[in-house]
Structures are given as C-alpha cells and as structure tokens.
Image 1 (spheres, rainbow, N blue to C red):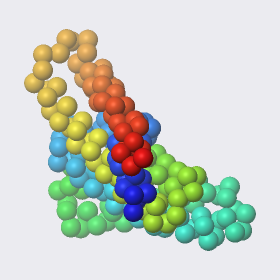
Image 2 (image 1 turned 45 degrees about the vertical axis):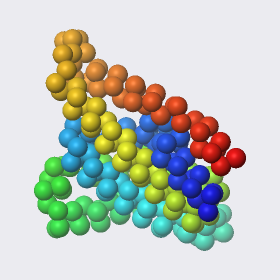
Image 3 (image 1 turned 90 degrees about the vertical axis):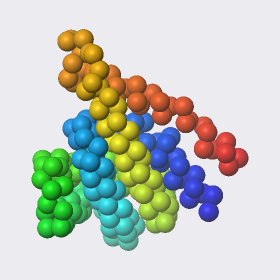
Image 4 (image 1 turned 180 degrees about the vertical axis):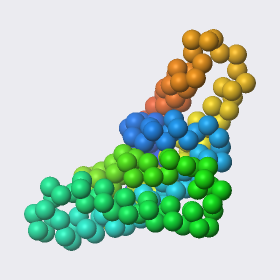
Length: 196
C-alpha cells in the first residue's frame, strides 16, 4: 500500500510531467488562460491517461513483448491514444458541448500530448505492474491537473499586473511558467523520506 502512495505522490509532486519533466507544455501554455478551460482539459487528459494505460500496458505485456515486437511500441501507443482522444471528443461534443467548443483545437492536441505518451511508455520502462501503472497514470493526471489549475491562477493574476511592454504576452507567461516549475523542485526527496 505504501508503494502505491509513494508512486501517487511522486507522480503528482516530484515527477510532475509538466513542471518537472516538461512534457505536455503545449496545452499547459495554450489552455491555462481560463480556469474552467484548464480544469476541463485536465479532466480530459486524466481520462485519456488512465484509459491509455489500461489499454497499452496489456498490449505491451501480452502482445508486443512475447512476439518480439517492442519496436512497434511508439506507433501502437500513439494509435491507441488517438483512438481514445476521438472517443473523448465524441463524448464531450454530445454531452458537454460548451466545454467541447471552449477547448477547440486543444482537444485533438491531446493526441500529440507527449505527457500522455510519456506516461504510457514510462510505465513500461519503470517496470510497473498493471496496478502500479494505473496509480502512476492517475497521479500523473492529477499532477497535470494541479499544474494547469495552478498556472491558470498565476495567469489570471498576470492580467491585472503592470508588466513592462517588452515582457507582455508570451515572455511573461514563460517566466511565470519557469517560476512555477521551480516551486516543484522543493518536493524532491520529501516523499521518499516520509516513508523511509
């Protein structure tokens, strides 16, 4: 049980895919302008991460590895993720059209979100069991959610700030993202020491 807690907390805080591993930066910078869009995108990413792990782990373990087809891993995983994103898009379009419209072009970009692909591949590379992979995927998704919501709050504060003309727009966004990322470096070593 402690192993699952360590995996979960590490995925959320220490190995945060956006703020520590720098994966999934496109939606992080693109959809974090408004809190509701950031939360909606994050929930969609959590769903896709969990479903992608639930599908790719057995494919890797029971199909690719036994047949020496490991070299097809990236292609197969991308196809699975693309199919799952299409499923999410269909569900959102049918049941939550306002969120589907507000996410716009960023929803199909989950297909190319390297955080989703990174989670599925790193679950295999770390040698996680199916249960550990699912916990890591949930923690990674929650870490993505935390990063998105936190940065949406930072960006909302930037809108009212007196920013020099040279830093307005993308430059101040990148500076704020780097400072937000630095805040997560403080968690390094904390989780492991709690359960030592």
